[in-house]
Length: 349
Ligand code: G3H
Ligand code: 13P
Ligand code: ZN
Image (cartoon, rainbow, N blue to C red; front, side, top):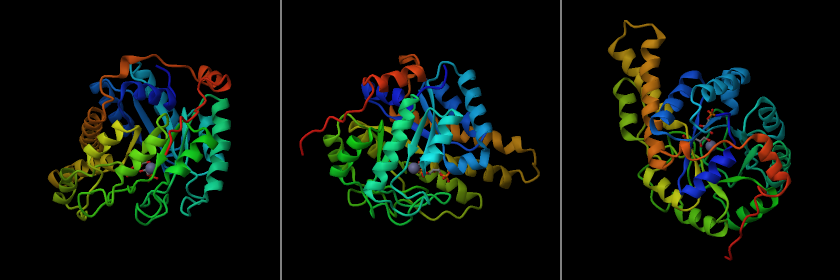
């Protein structure tokens, strides 16, 4: 199947009542792990690259690896998504390269650190949405700011510093026309999200439900959604790592989110943990080994296991064959003739 848009994947997920994992990649082995997991579970999938990933791998390597994935797994609907675009220019360059969807994270200024004003966010996100939709490409916006910091991206601080205001979410969706909306409900990027198993005082599922009630037709996106499982932390520490005790987002909370409008779930950290644990194990148990394949093969297998598990838990497993790809040109026509224009159905407060 050619690369498809995230909008199509999320529309289908909404019809089927499931969520779609969006997994971050930086290299070939991570793409291979995700595609094998998708094949194993028969899942549609979103593969995403951050600005840091584009810099690390270089755009052309990334794009051609994605084309290889689409060619090798014709049965899997696959979207290629830009994670946390920081400006119109970053999104434009991703679209010109061939990404089928972009996130314009206007919740932060282009420095990727300072919270932007609501008006700044609306202005840049609408500009990206207009440009992208003319070309059939889907757009994710963000309202509210996540906690933590990844590779220079993020405001730092707690996930509770800038949670999403439901009224602003409604106005933002209406004024920008985004296809999906990332909201801040207390999660953070990275491994250190919560100091104990999160309850409603730090992970605001009630806020998510309130936003979904106001915007029942808008696909919601949960960032910072790694579960940071204890067994993956333990493997790293058992083989010489020094992770401090930490908690992620429990899978059952994500599943509650999926029942309440969450269609895209971003996971990066869990895969980083799985890869690092597997490599550390080989280094400690077989210090005589020096062929990268000796540690990259178990690392790739460890990531595949996590991704396949999440695909099953999010409900996307089994849905790869439900539909055929809508071409990017037809998506563009849909935005132009109004059939794809997101008109949020706003429910009363
Ligand atoms: O947004 C966070 C993702 O985990 C990507 O992280 O910016 O370090 O590539 P990164
Ligand atoms: P995690 O750090 O929880 O995996 O979040 C990833 C993410 O939100 C990427 O945009
Ligand atoms: Zn994110």
